[in-house]
Image (cartoon, rainbow, N blue to C red):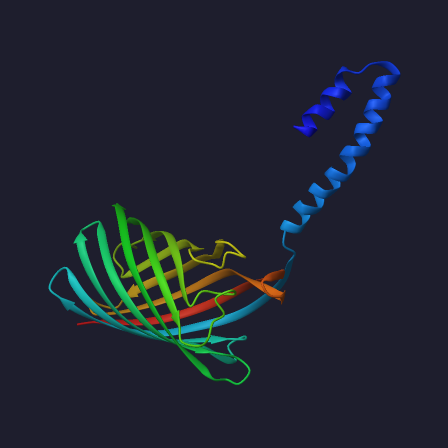
Length: 271
C-alpha cells in the first residue's frame, strides 16, 4: 500500500511539485530497493565448481539360469578400475530376477552388494543397492528400440551427514536404446543415452540431473549359451553438496563435475 501511494503521488503531481514529489519518493524508495536486492542476493548460494577427467575400465562375468521360457535369475560379478586404470574403484556383486511379462515388456528386480574404495586409506565401504527395471521395447526389422525406467535406492553403511547427503540415496534413471541385429551373425551393435535424476537430495541443494551417460557397444553371441559384450561409455556426473561454515547456514555449494571415459568387457553364460 505504501508503494502504491508513493507512485500515485509521483504520477498525479505536476510541474515543480511533481519534481519535488518524485525526488522525495525516490529517496524513500532507494533504501527499500537496496534492501530487496540484498535479500534476493542472500538467497542465492555461491557455487564453487571443480572438474575432473578420468579413464576407467570395467570387467564383468554374468551367469544366467533360465527358469522356463519367461523367468531367469542372474549372478553378475564386476570389477571397476579408476585413475587411468591404476586403482581399484569398486566391486559389484549383483543378483537379479527377470520376468518377461510380454514379448515387448520385461520386469526385473536387483540386489547389489558394492565394495566401494574410500580413497586415502584404501579401505572399502560396503553399500547395498536395490532397484527395479521396467523395459518396453519395439522391434521393426533388424532394429530393436527400448525404453527402460529404473527407480534405485543405495544404502550407505558408513556415516553420512543428513545435511550433506541422504543415508539412503534415491534416484530415477531413464534409458533410451537402439540395437541392430546384423543378419547371419551373432553381432548386435547398440547405442544408448541415459539420464539420472536425484529424488531426495538435501533441501539445501535440491534435486538435480546427476548424470548423463552415453554408450556405444556391441554384443556377440558365440552360441545360445555364450556371449561377449564390448563397449565404450562416457559418463558426465554432477555431485552437489552444501558446505557449512556455521551450521545451519550454508557457506557455499560444492559442485564437482566428473567426465569418465569407460571401456568395458563382459562375458555372459546361460544354462
